[in-house]
Length: 215
Image (tube, rainbow, N blue to C red; front, side, top):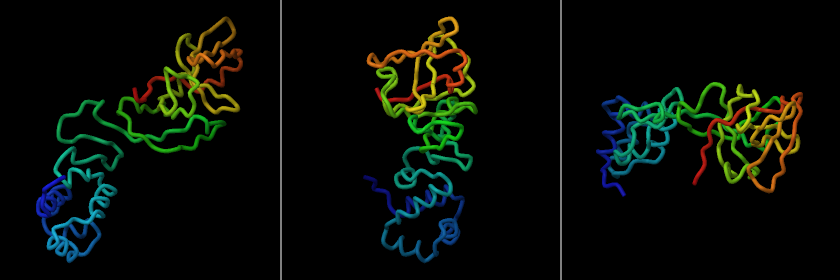
């Protein structure tokens, strides 16, 4: 629990907003200057102040409260960064939509939510699936997030592909080429292999290139 006083927290509000007076800060927060004066007397900071700066500028509430962690969680461009140290690409993140695998079908994909991923994993051709089934367990388990390269649809033996199934949405299969036939295998022992003709290769959504899941 933090022991920081109102004045400690107030100074961080001024620092991150580039303001120097109560009135200037009040203008940024969209409140009256008298509200800041009353909060100072009570030695308490209203929770709404933290929320306002997070929504407007991506300021980390924990940094405002305790001076801990990165100052910013998000920039106006949607990037999540650690500004206090030189960051490698893997330390910078981008917010991207994800799609529940069982909801997918046809041309229109409706996002189910957003996830922050390291910048190198958020390429222009990548779509992120959240696997709602366990057909590829134990390699990829239910609830995992999978990056699928939508341009990686050329069949390649041994690689894992996202495949459209009319009644299941999009599932993961390990692909092998057998002459003019595509053999699609699940890592789950209870799921049988299936075969597609080369003419049905259009059901390949893309190649799985990364997976995020708990151990």
